[in-house]
Length: 348
Ligand code: SF4
Image (cartoon, rainbow, N blue to C red; front, side, top):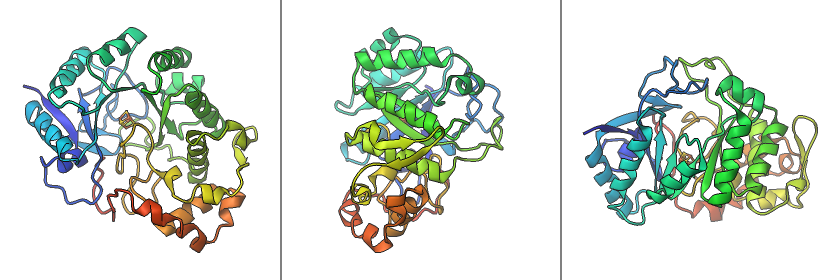
């Protein structure tokens, strides 16, 4: 029987590892396979990466016997500790068979939604995964422009985008893509791609690029936080049904947002939460505990909300007084929260 790799946070949340944390994941993250056939320049699991094999992004992974892992996840789901499973599939010659086997095993827990995040080459493979029991499918674009895609991931952006669009047309609202900010694209290029995704009902999971030792991009800095905040705000407005035209850009970046009382609209802090599939909070996936976070996996404190507004550089938000921003957080603070004090090692 093969071992599965659970993120350290997942292993802690489902009781398979002692982990003192107040940032439990709300999705169980499982990495299937090791050392990818592909060679994405940012990825610890890439073919040529010399990063430790037990890492994916900043997260360390815990090996666990397959049936024991499934049983613990199922019990945690029934207890309401986790709400979703994400299979993060490293591409290997037998990855499709491994995913099929995992999906079959999770059928023992009806209602437990399983997302499969893997490489698919054609719509028929997506159909097969849904037929096998996947609730959603993640097809990562990662990179925002054709030239960067070829340089950083290898392969053809247009083909990948077309496949993503075809899958989204066939399974509207059930397709997620990962977009990584900070790989050399302009803010405007990322914004345009986000708009194109949302227009096609493709759910966007936004990541901040995280340099990892042992990868070719180890010395590339993480993205400008101000730019990241503006993209988060733009995406939140799209999710709430505002037209893309409310966001104004120059040739390279977002310059203004034409929404009355923008601070009030954003005052619950949701714009700065981790986004992607429902209930995916990815604690510290690309953030450092103890610092201001790119993606918040729990409600922001008043100081964090004020900082996020300031960082955006948008005139309506920079002028908001800290007191004014904080009074709106009360409702958000009542939501289920990990209430993190952020002392732990990386552990989505
Ligand atoms: S958004 Fe979260 S749950 Fe969805 S595919 Fe990405 S990591 Fe998995």
